[in-house]
Length: 379
Ligand code: CAA
Image (cartoon, rainbow, N blue to C red; front, side, top):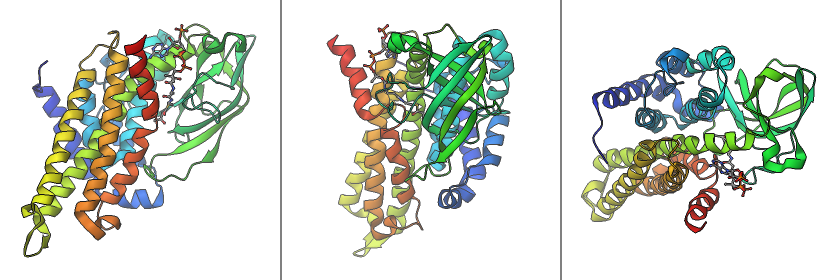
């Protein structure tokens, strides 16, 4: 395995870092406080090619590799983890699936503007009774001539309020269980589609998370992705890649926690010397760096693996499992190093902790990642 980044990787990393510092840093706390979606920044991310990083250039994307995507996701999430998840969902859960399994017409109509950042996408698998238990889909799609009629509710949908198109998993044949689930491209203005409850969250507060309601929502037949019954495999394979995006988001949070800790340790004095001169703090910093490096190795291994490789899903599950765990741990340590100041909103570390927790939950909880990893070993 090669551990050096090439020139393109370093250039992407630097571009993302500069963008995050100039466009995201200035109002990140205010957006968090007010639960404000970063509209302007997301538009600029589209212009920079960050919304369709891996999509081929002929479909409006940047045509980059997964390592470039990881590095950009880390830099964006270091400063604003909400912007990170908005970007990750559009890239990994929407553009990826459309490019891989969409037909040419679907790609021209939806993938091109999504990859260019002119449209925003969402991915609707979760339901009130289908979170980890994702096969338990209640949303139905019944064929009616050249249309499907969708009925049901999706919840915890990232980007749901601001999305122009949503990839919706729905049951086309209940008798077939997971093999009777199909995926549909639903436009926000289709009659019968509406945005319902907006969630008020602990963290990633400037990304929007909503429930979506489908009431006799008429979706053209040509908006089905792949064959009828392919929807669950579509969702699972897409999530294998999505977990690399969330692991990158978690890494960004962990790296930010370390950076803030080092900065603070060099400026705050206790007992007549800088925190950085106390061994108790030095050891915490050393442990944080070691955890970050370990998780980064797993993440880069997953990112360097082809999606068709049989180990891809377990590698991405391992990366997400560890990266999300260490994100929470590093954010907690950062607060400990900052003491009382870390518990207050004048410093960013309390937000890092709030933002970190979701990485252990969405795109498969840590328990789901353990299911994926252990099943591969024990089959
Ligand atoms: N690739 C291809 N096929 C897969 C697969 C994968 N990674 N994982 C499962 N499948 C297939 C299985 O092979 C099986 O098909 P066959 O019968 O043909 O073999 C079918 O899918 C059903 O799979 P299981 O029997 O394994 O299903 P299960 O009920 O035991 O569930 C699970 C497995 C891993 C727990 C799965 O349900 C899961 O991943 N749950 C978590 C869902 C999740 O991650 N949701 C995230 C929502 S999106 C989100 O969070 C976005 C956001 O906001 C940021």
